[in-house]
Length: 160
Image (cartoon, rainbow, N blue to C red; front, side, top):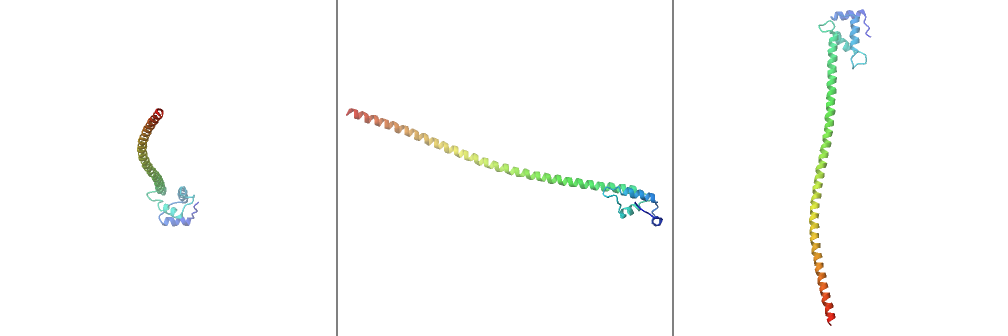
């Protein structure tokens, strides 16, 4: 609590601060309610508030305004921090999306290469199939010729 002697009060009156102990105690109590303090009031803060005692604006009004401004600053700082965190989170998401898009593009290239390989293999299989058919036809002709020759030789042996 604020301990004020009559000497201190008279010095305040010399500075055109017209107050009494009760008003100063109320002012101290009001200033100690600031969320950023631990119940103590800095001498500079009390002195600043005392300069407004008896002025057109009362110390409590000035203090309320100051508290409102400080609260607004804290809220703005909190919002700015939240916006920064959100921006960082979105940036990380964008990086992940870009990485995924790169992987998709690479996969598409690999699929295209596989498709080209399949087409080439289909052509090769078609070519081999044609060659196999030719070989089978030739084998069939050779069989027929062999059978004809065997039949002819068998007939000649019988005729002899």
